[in-house]
Image 1 (cartoon, rainbow, N blue to C red):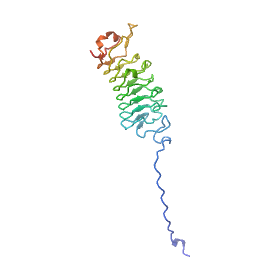
Image 2 (image 1 turned 45 degrees about the horizontal axis):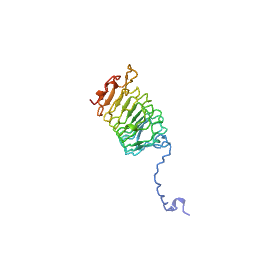
Image 3 (image 1 turned 90 degrees about the horizontal axis):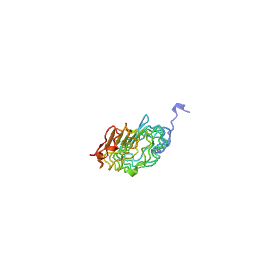
Length: 247
């Protein structure tokens, strides 16, 4: 019997290679692509997430992606988003700023922004909006320039309770009148290139108090409207600076 070292090696037939399983992305895996979102899903696949800020600019998006729960600033500029749903920002209680400038948004669900407790800035310029939903009273900065907003598309007294609002940009729309009452905190009001035809004595001032002065509002733009501001001197007697408008 030959020693073991001289035994012939047995030739084993190769095992068949199993087919490769298709690659799938487990969207429910914890933190696979970033922090959990308000809907319990991860994100940052198409966007860049840096310390509470989510950057989704120019990413060919047609809808708002799921966002991390700790998002404070969302930038979704220059995409093809057409509608903002009431679930897009659900449970994002730290969200302070939304910038959707330069999309194709023509509609926003009524409760899309209102439930956000810390929202300060909302930018919807360069879209196709004819109406605005109810907005939260915490807003400080609103920019809806260059849309198709009509006066009937704004909530009655929609800005009245915004005691922190400082900047309101409504230029290049189709508004027929100034959306009053305006909060005392307002510093900048841009309404140029609309269809505003007249002013009222209480638009900016208080006809019941001749000593009233609206100290904060220093920048009013009414140029590019049919209104002739020279005919309404009593409407801005309480202002620190005269409005810029048609003469």
